[in-house]
Length: 393
Image 1 (cartoon, rainbow, N blue to C red):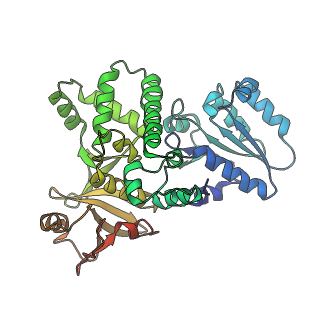
Image 2: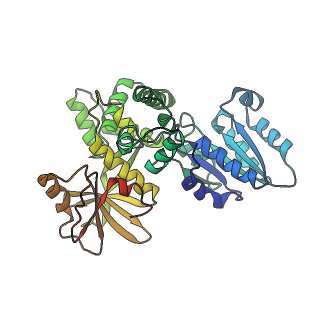
Image 3: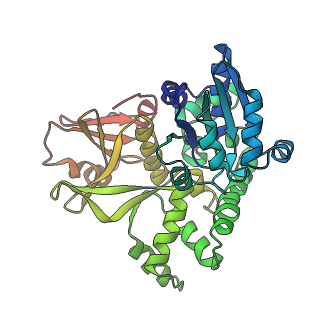
């Protein structure tokens, strides 16, 4: 497995903090691997570490609850700081009481939890004021490429546009096994985690909404527009129910919503947002045949890359003419348009025209899969393969 330095470097300044370090993210994005990589780094520096994986039955049997966990930790305390790593902590009864106590000893505590039972909202509720959290995502392209090379596998940009960046998906030997793995992961998240966790009664309606949202990534939605669409499909679902279901998907890191920003109102628009899949594979496994939606998946991965680079992202809405992303970082503003290709004249006009009339002090960028450079005097054209290798805009 590759060393995910981008993630670890954000956690490293907190190694010796008495704050609880929480590592969150969608299932199978690599949280446990990062936890072990941090432990190895701290251990290599000569520090005392203790790792407990509560997914393992023998560990759960020996340490079933808060009292048992506290007692076990106390047995391992000494004069030096003890670095404690608790993986899948939600399997311990009253885990929150244990963690709040353990952090008061001469320790540094790191925890992860499965989205099936322990979502980010519960972390923050139970550990209010005592934690710092870090979001882990599936691989961006440079990480996927590095891991594929490590595995001696071929995994190009088009593969990434279709199959995304779940680490174990890259380990599969062929497309069929990759799709089967991702379909099983999807079932675990949607059926086992969310339906069981929230005791969703009308599972058929929930699954139809989930399928509609995940296959329609990189589109602007409101809860009402989703409700209206479903009614057109003879599925009756209220706006409050749609809002509730969207909340479940966001809590499990299945989707991310990007707000619309209006330069005229100089504010984010409340009712509409653009919804993106956490990983583009969630779109691809819902496609019949091989007519994969590379256009919207490309926009989705550009968003993931911008977030990875540390930009705050919104959708720029210029009097109803949308620019895909407004990206802000260190006081600098960028406008980013995304298209699979602008070789066609009509597509070129559609993608470039929203930039017209915008202050040239703002850097304007278009990202496409074209090899020809379509830059103008006011708009920078980045080829996708070049953009995926960048550290900043």
